Length: 584
Image 1 (spheres, rainbow, N blue to C red):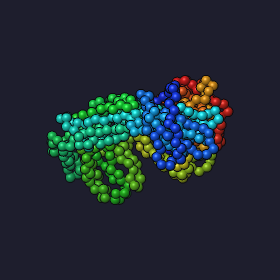
Image 2: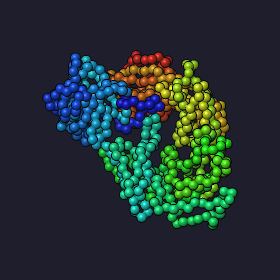
Image 3: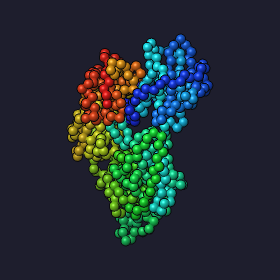
Image 4: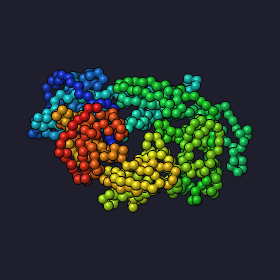
């Protein structure tokens, strides 16, 4: 069962941090005598039993404990809700001194539990960062003595200093973490903080996982004299340029003393840890670049966007803290010169997005080791046009606000790019860097996936397109996910909850938007929503939450024991047999 609603683009499933575990413990001591309260009426009382009115005879009870020590947690807030993305809370109780809670007089059905307490990560029952086990009660399905485990929050903090050991205030501290949201381990942005005047930063309420820290800043004392040009706008010789010993910069620095993300050291973080990561910034002589631009054909400012300088950090482009002075006349169509100063040596991307009146976005990779002049118009010709058309397999109209996205795979290609499809499904990308991309389609109120795709000028496999040095023309047929698949999972012939349920397309490498995941409920039931028509294999994997399940070589060993499923676009599909749970 899903714990929270997410956009259709994230139906692949959230990152999983912990393998589900079944821990057999003695039942908790009985709670104090029940005190009947109405759901959502006032504040719940510590240790009370929430009694719901109505003709019902089932109960959900248990204990809330720390996942690291097993210690019962008193005064934890336990909320009972109806299932579903918008299921509203129906009752709430505060745990007693022994960590116990109880909800009495429930009607038969499926419920979700959420527990929260200061200093711990709020979680559902058997939570796997967005997936949880729904509690099903009814005849022979009473759910007493549940053991809800909460993970203590973790903290990463420290101090950023300069070469003299003085604090660096106003530094931007970037946090990254390993993530499996798409079924493949990636490093993604996880937050940002700014150091105070003592150089201190802190990231609190973190989940256990693997993290990375990077810092970007400018020396407070730095002075970057503007480069001089002659009457034609050309830079003067270096011996005629102003110089200053304070013309220095900090390179973006990653823990531990690395100036590129590929060399960054991982920071393992366990539940409840408080890890101190101090960073030292080293000033180096700054680089100046002069960027020449040719204005667009439009008069005035419309349609023109000034370029920016970015640097790669785990595949994410981070804006550099540089100073830019622009010279030249845009209104009279003179060449424009941008003087970028305060840059540490390194590899950068110079990017210019389309302006108000359109125009082509441009990118240029630049390696900076000395002062130089960059003719941006000449460098930006790298990359090719990718255009095409998308249509619905049903022959109907495209959903409103349909957009297509090129997502680079495995660090290849350029940054992600998005384009809005017109009413006929046409789209255009410009200056797409060579590499392998996943072709994704998103729309308001619909779950779309590529059912079939062909291309000229590029190799295509499933929804992946390999862009090389020639223009690409794509044609894609789309299917809308409208089918709900319902089933049950059993382990050794018995229903089991907390199991990862995964629906794998017949071609495991076809595209992430075809996969569906869920977690089995306490009675073994599961639901997979918005499934795209096609052929699949359904697998249930015990403790499978940390698998890189989107990698064909990882999921292949499980497919032979899975259940074959064919979805034809029906509204609902109830599987005729249970799926057997496979061990990790």
